[in-house]
Every structure is written in C-alpha cells, then in structure tokens.
Amino acid sequence: MAADCLFCRIAAGEIPSDQVHSDDLVVAFRDIAPRAPTHILILPREHIPSAASLTEEHGPLLGRIFAVIAETARKEGIADSGYRIVSNVGRWGGQTVDHLHFHLMGGRPFTWPPG
Image (cartoon, rainbow, N blue to C red; front, side, top):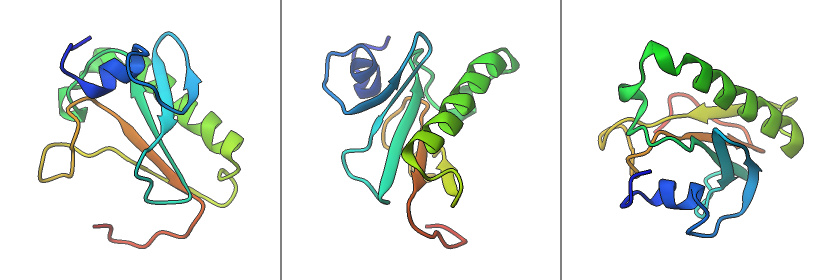
C-alpha cells in the first residue's frame, strides 16, 4: 500500500466508498463522478501505478480483475446490452489517480472515437 495513494486508502477501508465487490485481490466501487448510468472502478489491492507498469507476472491478477469486471457487468444488468472498459495511462491519457484501475461503464450507448 502506498500511504499517499487515494485508491490504496479506499481499498484498505480508510476512505469510505460504495463498494460493489471486495476480495483479497480486487476492489470495485461506484465512481463518485459517474460518466454513465453505471460507472464502477475496479482496481487491484496491490499498488501498481498504471497499465504501463504491468509485467507478465501480473497475468493471474489481470485475469481476476477481468473476471470481476464481467461478473459486475452481469450483476449491474449491463452485460447483455454492452459496456465499455477503460484504463487510462499517464496524464495525457486521462489518468488522474496513479493506481491501476479500470472504468466499467454502461447503461447508455457510447460513440467512437472516445474523448
């Protein structure tokens, strides 16, 4: 855990969140500034700065994260209509918290290209 990391503190329960999933590896909670009717953040408990920091050794963790994403999409009722998964990297990529996380967004149509 990085003491100055907002998401590490949320994962540790130091900062309240509207959690929809929690296990030994992964935490998922509702975004406080949603950009879609369903907007949930999924992140590892382990402090990893961004997707740019991932290695092959993170494979099992990523498998767990994506399994949680799929399970959460089903529970939220957006699996059949479709959803978007986003992970921003760096400031120009739109990353505002330096802790690997994925945005699960659904409940409305999305356009392409984003942003």
